[in-house]
Figure 1 (cartoon, helix red, strand yellow):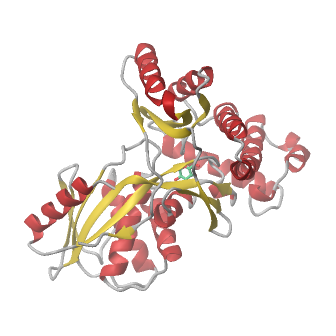
Figure 2 (cartoon, rainbow, N blue to C red; figure 1 turned 180 degrees about the vertical axis):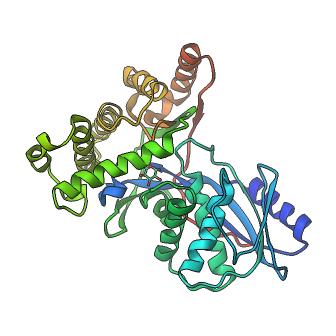
Figure 3 (cartoon, rainbow, N blue to C red; figure 1 turned 60 degrees about the vertical axis):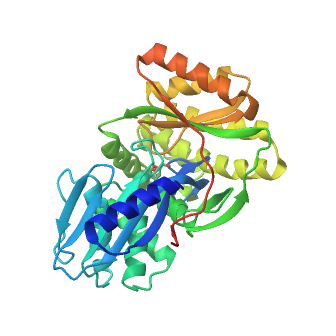
Amino acid sequence: MSKKLVIQVKRCFKEQFKTNPLVVFSPGRINLIGEHTDYNDGFAFPAAINKGIVLAISKSDSKESYVFAFNKNEIHKFETKHIKPLKNGGWRNYMLGVVAELRVLGKEVESFNAVFGGNIPQGAGMSSSAALENSFVFGINELFNLGLTKHEMILVSQKAEHNFAGVKCGIMDQYASMFGLKKSALLLDCRTIESQTYKIDFKDYKWMLINTNVKHDLSESEYNDRREVCERVSGLLHLNALRDASKEDIDRIKSNISDEDYQKALFVINENQRVIQFSEAIKNGDTKALGNLLCQSHEGLSTKYKVSCKELDFLVDRAKENPNVLGSRMMGGGFGGCTINLVKKDAFKTFKKEVSKNFKAAFEYDCDVYSVKLSRGTQIIKK
Ligand code: GLA
């Protein structure tokens, strides 16, 4: 986490509200593999990272609550008892959604003042929204002694996203952001919402994220459409979720569904299997298999699930051509954002330079390259 950001947010809070706040850090996440599997009750393999949201918050005696977005220099004033989703509300909806969903649970949320700032690139598929939701639910829970468990808190965050941001997301992002552990990734069973911790150390290799800086306008409705397709197919099979389906199952109903829907369901079934194979490859130290699985995942996301875009495909193709990159795929919901790449440590700089140059030549603007540390989940920052 960035100490500078913590200092800036705290200072800004004290200037505005003249008191000492409770400070919470809530991270973004990466996902090693297992994309679009979470809302199918399947498996994913996320990890929290060292970039996130810093929230400074305290109780207020006023009738109104004030929340200041440090990076945007915007303030929002509201009453916790009268909350509705805002049209084009942006960050406000994630925060308001959390307060509203806490009230749905019968939790009394009194007025508060808050300042938050972040360093997760937006629209990069690194879950800045889950980090924001989790920072608020965690901060408010602590401030007002609401007594929620972490599991309860992430469900509040997820509902905020469903009902206030309009994205029918799964639980992966909120889980990873809340439960992340240092130097580890979490093999997450999205049905039980429990995970197994895997220490991640690939010796000569490390993760590189490459941001296309593309954000598709329709990504939210496209996302909800994918979820609907999956629910329709599992419904036809009289199953709770595609997690329970096999290829043989969907083959049986192939003539009743469109080829597009068949391919999407097949992707989910395959991707779920890849997560398990990936976890086995980690145990066996089989880095080659890890790389192949990443590439297969991208192939499926791009050609079957159709959530990639030309910029992401371009980056994955460049990675595949390079012998120092074991594997590469788009990460997160898709339609833009980042690729995640497993790159040889001593070739990191040269690949970064080369891929950046090629991207610029192809699209006439810059991509961004990041390396991240796998880190602890949402936490209070002591003074
Ligand atoms: C977004 C959603 C997650 C998950 C991913 C795709 O990040 O918020 O719940 O579905 O897309 O794996």
